[in-house]
Length: 225
Image (tube, rainbow, N blue to C red; front, side, top):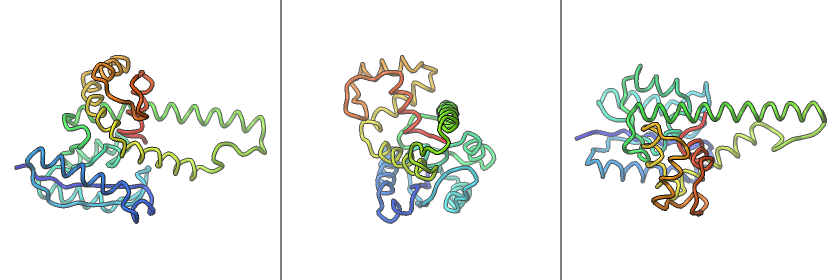
């Protein structure tokens, strides 16, 4: 019988105090374990960001426990664990810990790595575009206040959108299909066609998927650095 250590994480203290997000993650992981006829050992919960350089003591403890117990580290979504390819590689290679993602039950380490690489690259491109745009606007009007005003507010809004995506049932249903097709090397257009074929609702409740909406699903739901 496979053994599982569950790791759950939310980004803000307010979310941790209210339990929003954490309960949904735990329930999803427990359902995964039941479907796999596995054995639940322990849950580790983190309240804090996964940005680069941020120490996460609960994750460290979960990894230690999983390695000692020869258990699989289970997370609800991949970005609850990490948003960086390098860190994911450290977890599965240097630490030697097996990883499973409840919303991507058929994805192996290779598939998860490919999903993360794709999403990380997309995020870097978007980030650079935003920085370039901001720089141009700042040069044109040095005294203006653009967007949310501070990077902290921008990050808070991004985290809020990501938490909303995690709890969206339409997104969760589509995630497994997207994960499998990314592993198979399918294009965004092909993935969108498959989702339309099986009449998966979009996160907003629509009935039509496009390559751009598939890309958004991957970047918001699976991982983002």
